Image 1 (cartoon, helix red, strand yellow):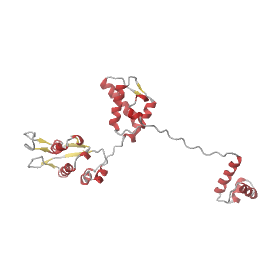
Image 2 (image 1 turned 120 degrees about the vertical axis):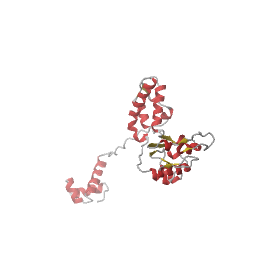
Image 3 (image 1 turned 90 degrees about the horizontal axis):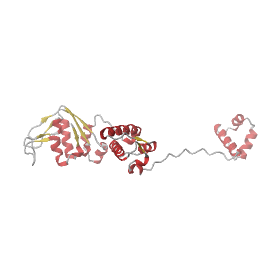
Image 4 (image 1 turned 90 degrees about the vertical axis):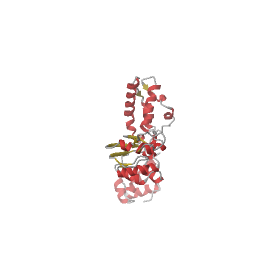
Length: 258
């Protein structure tokens, strides 16, 4: 049993989830009506976007989850229910708890086996395969040619941040299927919101500064050598194959202190 919590009008949320008895409100069915929790008996109920539920409804959901009993609106008895519950949120529920918009006790009751689904921008390597699947489905359903994406267009699509996640990508694929007559989708065919995003090319790493002349090279080499021997001129001179006096003279020439 799937329940889109965001799509239920607030005034109907209680009757949709918990059901009602005859005469509960104007327009109610004469025989009453079971709620979603009753209909999910001995099965699974999926509460999608549960964060959109108001706090009073959250309290009632908590009671049903804890007691496995539901009371219909205008009902006189508790109805036992046995179900598995799965809940999803399009926001971080821990943040909603901190903001006071989601009950802490319901959060801990539901947070038994959390599963985080990454945003599409975190799985950009999947975008080519998803696009291909959406193009294939669109071609079969609407009888259009199966599209392919040029390298330039694909670069745009992969670097776009997709705030609407996979739904936005699917809508984009359908838009391209219907608006592009060619088999290959070019960069200029993409939706305006994608073309409006500037692609920042990575800056090339700075090249190491080259010594401007032989003297600069010798000075740099002496500094590195003396540093390697922690200023020990005797060991440095042995390594360089020169006398200590010659080394001291060069150090003085280039203003290097040992």
